[in-house]
Image (cartoon, rainbow, N blue to C red):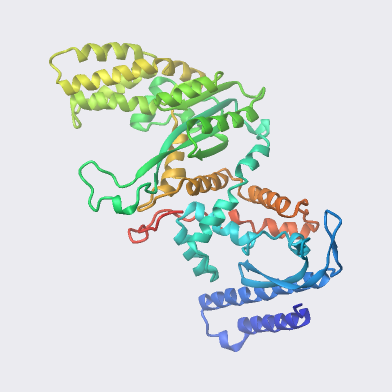
Length: 514
């Protein structure tokens, strides 16, 4: 069946005339701006559907119906017009195109390749919109947004499947992506790594799960997502006193107010474990090496397994124990010795923190171990003193904060702490969420693409990869500059801002996440 383009053009002209009449006719003279805006939007969606149908009809009419020659030299005769559905932002559009078939030889629809179509019915624009909504919001809310705004009904299952499919090329994309230009980089190359638990689906059948949890029991289980980041930053020399003033009293000096910012930050998260995450991080680091890099710093918390791997894999990096984590151990001692509300606790903390930042951590270890032998302290206080002393003693090689500050190096892992919170927790740990490993891995991959500012570039790459895989031919470049300009103004990342992940209690009653 070949659509009659003349009939479609006639319908479009009538639709457009109706749109003009709607805007300027007598019926809308008493209408509100809200009513007219909504009416125009609805009519434009209808008009868009007819225009897209016209485009398909014209392209199909231009196709040859002569028999095709296959790669093996055999010929496929034209059989008939065959329909496939195209699920666009204007709704579902039927696409009739020539279909070639011969028993024992194969089949082909050349127009599919010419139009850059995928192997399912969803348009790339619909896929990218649902992907973008899905990486920032729960799937059922993403589905509701599409239904409310465009009248599209895309199930949560389809959103999850599209995200899984569209994330397959993420690793290949970053493998071929070039490093940032040296002139856009700063002198210190920084890497950070940390883990964040993701709630997983039950391994055991539902019948074996207790109706009511006992004391200390938890519903479900978590698996660690290892989050890594790499960026460059300019040196920022500080004194121990300046850090104490900023940290405890929020006093910013004139130099602190001009604190340098991370450049070309690249974030990633994976469920594949520490080794896989650090191996990938090493690849990213290698790309960014060059004569412009003067210092190399690695920041993480006191996780010994992570520290050992970083020291072994990043030999030319100076490993630094995150100052904030170290200071938490001082707070534990101060609270244990003085109490939560003691008026001298803050002054005691400032003094001990300044000693630590001034390179006197070894003295603190000696002091705490001596106090742990003092019988005037309780067993609990002695245990806390010993715990902190042992922690500091083990991490002494990574706590030379006086030298780090003098060289202008960062000493806190705020970048990775923030990433663990907003990149993993804010999306994966909403109430009721449970994930399958493959589902959360795909989501984190696409979420990294969005957070790294690579959304539109990645999807162009994905379309090229898909096209080559489906049709074994290169993805045709856009030959019309005016259409390139239009495409630049309709990029998903610009058109759709990240939805909020803050939801009401009612909205958090979620089904199992795919």
